Image (tube, rainbow, N blue to C red; front, top):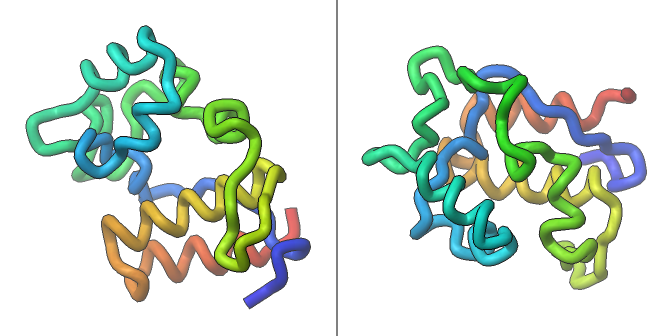
Length: 129
């Protein structure tokens, strides 16, 4: 795999792994939100654990342009205090590295490490921006 310096984050269409909002699966995400954001987050969780605005059949967000701030990758670093520990134990503050790590975890959790979504994501983050 390409080194961290050569990888860049990019969302891929047809994934939606981050739209699985089940609170039991995301306690650290909920804890990082403000009380108002927590209320909004929890109001978006459907009975199946997916966001009520996520079209599971088409794998797309129905409110993408109007989605809440906590659904934007640009807010990951401020929400999580700016630092995340990588697999090597080193602190990472770069938003792209945090986004990649979060996506890898979510995709693996939802679809598995060998799924076509994971393979597409890995190919995408290796490409130059």
